[in-house]
Image (cartoon, rainbow, N blue to C red):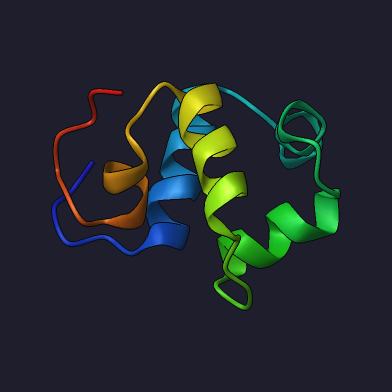
Length: 74
């Protein structure tokens, strides 16, 4: 992971690192696959509750996922 990445870039990288498809990730966090696609494309941002579910599933902190912090610890 590089510093300064946006939310959508971090999400895409994390899904690749965890070898998760958008469809599988969507099911795990209880959203539609199109929502995940929009998050990765940067056309939509999730609400905080979804961000918390994403972070927990990806084993990173919400702050890291949002690009606020570069420390991945959850």
